[in-house]
Length: 331
Image (cartoon, rainbow, N blue to C red):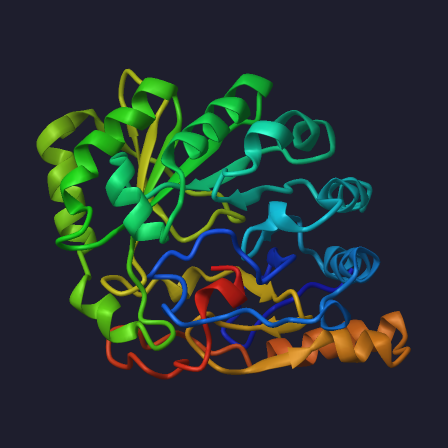
C-alpha cells in the first residue's frame, strides 16, 4: 500500500476536513470583523465527494479524519456524512471540532453515527466576555452542549481555549478547574498570525511558557508528561495526577512543532492545504469533477505532498497568508 510521505520523511496519517466555511460565531482570532462568507453551494464539496476523497486518503494510509468548519454542525444532514465516513475501511478515528452551540440536540445522534470524540472551543467562562470574544456567542448553550456530549458518552472530549493576553489569560486556572470538574481534557492554544488580524494576534500573544508556569503554580508535581501517539495533534500534554484530565499546550509561535507534522487540510471548497502557515494548495474538487480516475487522483495527492514545506514562519512572518481566514481553513 502506498503511504503519504512528505519531502522531510514525515508520514501523513491525519486529514482535517472542513465541511463548511460558515460559522454561527465570529471569534475575532478566527475571522476579521468585516469578513463575510459568500460561498455558493456549487463551490462546496458534496458529501459524496468528501467521502470519495477521504477514501482515497485512507487508501494512502490516513487513519484519522477530523471534521471541522467553520462550524461543521451547521452543514445540513451532517449525520449522513459521519455515517458515510464510518464505513470507509482503514479509518480508526473520526473526531469532531465544534463550538458546541448545536450539540444539545445532536450529541446522541453524532455518537450513534460514527463520531467517537470531540474538541470543543470555549475561550471564557464569563458570559459577557464569551459574548465579546465570539461576537454574540451564547456561553450557557455551549456548556449545555458540552454536558450533552458527556451524557451520551462521547469520549474523550477535549476543550480548546485560545489564550489572549489582556483578554482571557486570567481564566487559565478557572478553565482548568472547569475541565477537571467534568473529567475533560484541556488544550491551551497560542494565537496564530493568520488573516488581517495577524497583528492583533501578535499583540495578544500569551506564550506557552507563561501558560505552563501558571498551571505548574497550581498543580506542581501532579503534572505528569504524556507520550503522544503518531496520529495526535501538536499538543505538549500532561496528565494531572488524581484526575481524569490532561492539560496541553499548542504553541505554534513559541515552539515550532513542524518536525512532527502529520496532517494536511481539505477545505469546504476542496482545496488541499499543505500547511496552515503557507500558501501552497491544490484543488482536489476540480480534479474530481473533471472525471479524473482514482489512481490519478492519488498521484495528484502524492505530487502535492512534495510541496509540503518543512515549517511555517509564524515566529518571523505575520502576513504571509493575510488573504486567508482561519474560519475558511478548519484551524
